[in-house]
Length: 167
Length: 161
Image (cartoon, rainbow over all chains, first blue to last red; front, side):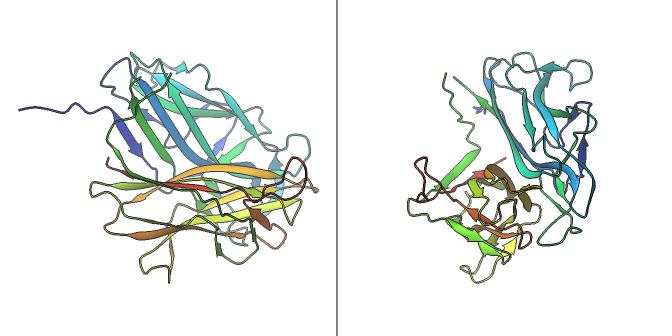
């Protein structure tokens, strides 16, 4: 008997994700976490995650709008993020709408794509986010508005691809 | 450093990128977005199909607001009728307090269940309201004047896991 020891590959998609509100505590983005089992410990990790994010606003009632400013970063762990949580260098970045002028709203897909080179000894990876302040929050995964209505909620399913790469 | 992804889980990798693209004004009627249609047959081992988009919208004609309601659709009858994949709906763009002429570049991915045989896939979109109309794939030259357009890149891949 012979066996093919395939390189690690993971794909997942969360269907109908609930709306997440990103505030000032780092929060795991729905559908962004993956258990990783590399065939070769020296391999790099390909990580590509997509979701939807928007300014903290409901166009049906803009009285509570906020100028969103969000910090994203990738993390790794050897215990499913129970106590071992390590930020991955080079992954930190921001996204925002216009943070000066009020009532400027942004709505867009968020794609986070990384190659992580130093993953030996780790078993999990995920994307987290927080807002800069309590008045600069953001929404994820769902829109309040669609096709001319501001009361027609739609969701965007998450997409995650994680794969082992050999140099 | 370069890397090899030979997990064998990505198959029938197909890309559409045309050189004859022309920008497209989009109003409040649902229309197929130019150069996003692709006919695709998943690999026999596929469990999911990954649809990836790299495209742009521009502010024109509504300088203060561009809101695109876009969705992935499929047809099994040669394009006569189209069905939206639930969960692929995206509300993209900006709405501003004053005219500020935004240009947006987008990359996104959708995973849908694999199928047997061939399907036509496309993006369809409309503006949210008549105040939020936009242009798909508009390009403006550094030297001024309209360019030939910013071609969207559509990639479809079979996922066997």
